[in-house]
Length: 178
Image (cartoon, rainbow, N blue to C red; front, top):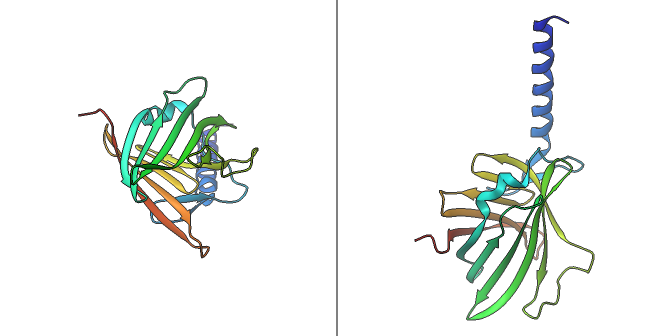
């Protein structure tokens, strides 16, 4: 095969892969995407998300929310979320960011203040990676957008009681950065 034919074949494969991937994502809310059924997320590694490490805080959901991420290690990051309303814990989340099948996935569980779980013992809420760009990571229904070293926005597509979807915004600032 000639050099020109090899380059043309490579470009065709790149265009095909890019087109296939773009078709695998759909807009869910203004700032979130969803992964099309049966599609795989883009290649990514946990190290790509090291910028999340630390303690983040915002006013949202009628109270103060904390999100804390561990540093990447052994292909995983671990985190927790806490909502404080009127001086009392509202609920907690424990989550992981892990490498699976050449991409990454956020997996979480919700807990009441007494640590009783919302999900069944073997169930989790999963957010597969849909797309990754400079300073942004789009998971299925969840977007992280970096706004400098010490600020980020998180957009969450939440189901409403009537079956619709609404977007909740968390404008986080890094705790202890001042």
